[in-house]
Image (tube, rainbow, N blue to C red; front, side, top):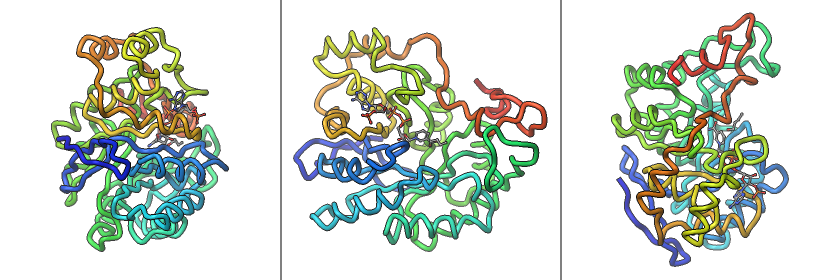
Length: 321
Ligand code: NDP
Ligand code: 1BO
C-alpha cells in the first residue's frame, strides 16, 4: 500500500506501508562502494530530501554514514523522519553473534536505534573466508536461532523492523514457518534486466514489502541499463534521464528502491520521480526486456564447486530461477 507524504523540501515523497504499520520512503540512498565518499554522499542525499538510507556492516562505511546522519540531524533533519537500514553480515550469522554485531552497527552509526535490520545473505561464512570459499568456510546457518535474536532486538525497541535479503521462496517459507515477528521487508536485486517476478509475487502474497537493490543494474561491474536502447528511448520520450526511468519503474512495481550515487547531481536526479509516471505501454515494454539475469549471483562469495555445500549458483537460489 502506498501513501504520499511531503519532505522538508516540499517535494512529494511517496512511502510504502510496512506490515508493522511504519512507513518506508520509496527512494533511499545506497551506500555500497561509496568508500571515502560515503559521508559526502549521504549528507548530500539528506540535503536533497532523502529520508531513507541503506547501509551494511559489510560496506565498511558505517562510521562515515553515521557522521553524515549526525551532521544532518544537527542541521535540523529529525532523526524520527529518517529510515535507516543496516544488515547482518554472513560471518555474524549465528545466534550468539547477532547482538554484538548489531551493537557494533549502532555504535558505528552513532544511533540508538535502527529502523530496519536485515539478514544480508542467507549463508553463514567463517571469519576471513576466501572468495571463492575454501572447503568448510560456508558453515551451517541456524536461521531460526538468528531470527529469534533479531526478534529480541525488536522487543527491546532497538530496531523497529526486521527482514531479509537475497532469499528464495523456499527460504522465505521456512522463515515464515517459525517467525513470531514477521519479516517486514525483503530486499533483493531488481531492475528491468532481472525482474525477479516470482519472489515479488511471493512477498506480495505474504504482505512483505520489497526493496529493489541495484535498480540501475549496478553500473560498472553490472548490467549497463543506463545505456540500454529501450531505457534511453523511453527517457528521451518522457524528457527524463535513464536513471530516473529505472527508479520510477521500481516504484511503479510497488517496491521501494535504493539507487547509489556519490554525485550530488545524480543523487538529486534519482529522487525526482514522484510527479510523473511511465505510461502503461512503456512500463510493460520495460517489463519485457529479454536476457533476464542476476548481476549479483553470489557465486564468488558462496560457491565451492568441488566441496560445496553450494556447488553452483543454482544451488544458492534453490533451483528456483
Ligand atoms: P545501482 O544500480 O544503484 O547503480 C549504482 C551505479 O550507477 C553507480 O556506478 C553510480 O555511479 C551510477 N549512477 C547512479 N545514479 C545514476 C544516474 N542517475 N545516471 C547514471 N548513472 C548513475 O547499484 P548498487 O549495486 O550500488 O545498488 C544500490 C544499493 O543497493 C547499494 O548501494 C546497496 O546499498 C544496496 N545493495 C544491497 C545488496 C544486498 O545484498 N542487500 C546488494 C547490492 C546492493 P555514481 O556513484 O558515479 O553516480
Ligand atoms: C557482497 C555485498 C553485496 C552488496 O550488498
